[in-house]
Each structure stands twice: as structure tokens, then as C-alpha cells.
Image (tube, rainbow, N blue to C red; front, top):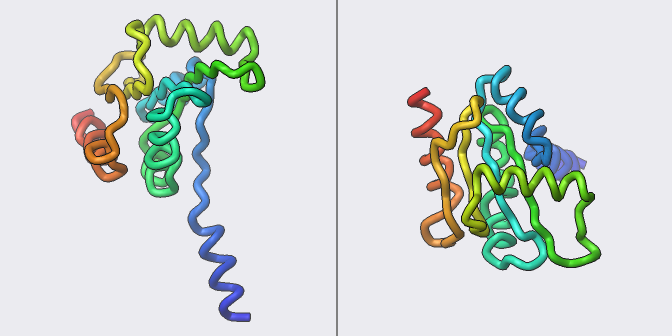
Length: 148
């Protein structure tokens, strides 16, 4: 019974309250009112191998999400190609607008750190698993957040 309690607590103690959103306007409001930055990730979720790896190995990791909870509002702008993953016309238009402003070169993956006023303060182009680790991302974000 003791072992079962430990397992149960372990599973639920790692849950975070942060989730990725698609609503950039809401993210800007939240960033402004909660004194946070926005981390905007441009992804091709069903065709871009590096995008999928970055998401799995770094951005959706429990360690990174726990770090992000108090510092970041997470926004994902997805550009799937498969018909079965097609986004609504409204969300597609919204993501295209974000790409025009923050990813006009069409890079995938592209991750952008944005202040509450919508200004880019840092960006990461592509994904290299040896240099873009959870620890490195956290350290680079922390440098910007501390300068605030």
C-alpha cells in the first residue's frame, strides 16, 4: 500500500498547470498582466521532423513545462499539411498572421521569445539536439527574464 501511495504521488506531483495555446492575443494579455514572456513556437506538426523532435524532447518535457509555468505563456503556431490534421480556416489565418510578423522567412521549427509588448527578444532557428537542450533553453530564457 505504501508503494502504491508513492507511485500515485510521483505521477501527480509532476503535473504542471501550463498548456500550449493558439490564441496570441490572449497570450499577450496574460503576459502583460502576469509579468511573463511569450514563447511562440512555429511548427509543422505532421511533416517537420525537427519540429516533432523539439516538441517531444524539449518544449513538451515535464522539466521545461515546470520551468515555463512561472515565466512564460506558451503559444504554438502549427502549419500541418495532412488533410486529417487540417486546422480551422480561422486558426490557419491567425497562424499565417503570426508568421507574417514573426516568421516571415518560413523557418521550421522557429521558436521566438517575445515580451508582453510583442517585441522579439530572442529566437531559436531549427533544432539541434546537442545544442538546444532543455538546460540550454532554460538558461538562455533565464538570462533574458533576469534582465527585465
